[in-house]
Length: 279
Image 1 (cartoon, helix red, strand yellow):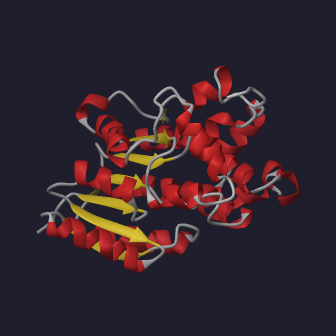
Image 2 (tube, one colour; image 1 turned 90 degrees about the vertical axis):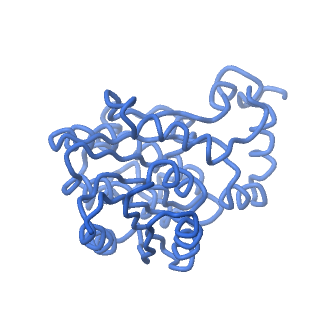
């Protein structure tokens, strides 16, 4: 029996929280680079009454993304995209961060945008990091937004000699995500569909635990201890925002980015987390 279909990329806590919130009654196709991760999420959700199938999917590969979409279309019209796939600064080298988080996200939004059903909606998970890097020029922002995906990694600002470290690469990738969503929202709109991004701060997930235990662990612990909320967030709090953006109450919202970081970015610019300020 044909159903409306959700594509979920990235078999992690945030993606699953959003899929549980929005995916009841749908066919959910979950893709992850590690099939066992997708199988684990599918098992948890199927045991809770959802209809989920797992697939192996590499976000850095256009062919792999196309295969995931082709499989999803076998079950019905694709009406939802939840992109929660990616790697963090402590998990991967610069090249992988740019290929997955920047290029891969651009390709995914483009490919899904070609087939998304009228009335469809998507969210992609970006990061607070894109909000805290130095401002780019208007020309650079437009390049990130509009350069054909296959040419993105050739941009001057993304050349290896212009990237300081993995955190800088991650910030650029997430800035690109935000700008790409704005540009893609125009294209999705021609199909009667919407796309937005969410930029979480420190959310307690296995990825965050890698950061806590990585070389910048003390930096991240200090960040949530000294943000206005005084704590890290949860995946379900991100899903709260996704529920607004993907539901009827968010029907006038598209091409937007929602920062959900407990005020960490505010503190970075105007509070105790400001660089050089004593905490």
